[in-house]
Length: 459
Ligand SMILES: [Zn+2]
Image 1: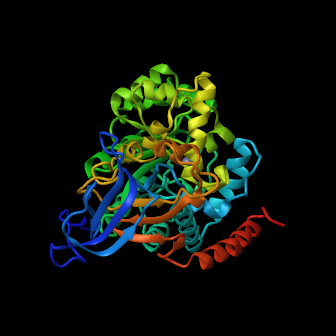
Image 2: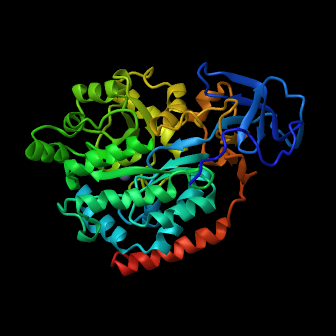
Image 3: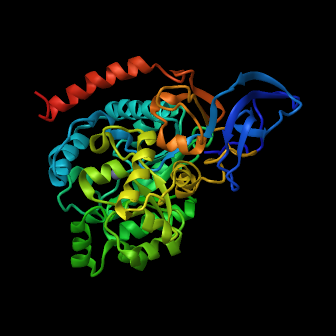
């Protein structure tokens, strides 16, 4: 599978035109200097940003948008997003973790057909687009090809993965493979999906949790991810019982054990990491590993993540929504707001985790967390044209005095006006253009009820 050509080419036949010119908006670049350009210009050729500045280039624009009064921001990055769980929204509210997992999620995931996964993933991608997300990292389900087809249809960017387990320990037997097969099935998927859709889709190796994984599976996934130049996703330190399990079976806590195995490092993406101590934060931070912070899901079933402490330990932290049955609102916009609040309360210090830092988590730091920051996460010449137009002229966002802060503290989903991914508009003026939104929603409603009935969780 070939990756897209790094040199801009495509719809503009000659170099005297650009495909899209955005003008008049406040451009929040999230580049290294945190540059904000009032009345700025962003120009796109094919799938790349070719010009950013206070003045336009001399070229003619095929499409020109006047964005006076609006904001232009990088496409948001959702570093933990279960595509196959979207049809389970509301299926597991107000239950404890073991009921959540064993009585709701395992039966749901076991029952899923490939067609249901494809619809689930498309409905999930729809909610991502509406929330300004252009890149997701899926920790994986069982029908990866179906999820991949949906990502292709939706037009967003992302990592596909296959959730792998090689130890039973309470999991549905059909999900559990022997170690070699669990690695080979991922190799096979990687060969087909890594670099697919003109490079928009990548494949991540994935381990569900250490409860259901041998050391060989973890090490094998890590080796293969490094060889391929991709990431390894793993749910890490979710509950105290996980650390107790690893102490009993390996003699140390999860993160200490992962360090011992040598798998921590750039490209290792730990989802949650709620139950880690200061020494474990040091291990993650000094190794270059990243954490995906999923606050709503953490508060629902896991615990209070000490993200401000993670920053102090030098850990790269991105934001994630997790899945619809554990969060219900799959909105990175909501996630930014709540993430900004919890750490202030935990430390009783309102200066902790300022909005600018939270917005970095949703953009450039999220891109670093998924090892894609060479192409996405900020608006810079040469990067992919993944961008979002925000309309702040709404009751919740006026007055707009500090734009970057407002993106975290007052922006809501409704403020997301248009979304471009890889140079292609997926939503224009709040109308999803990439596929049929209402048909997707009606089908998702009908199919989800049928699926819940099939597993005995709906009357
Ligand atoms: Zn998860």
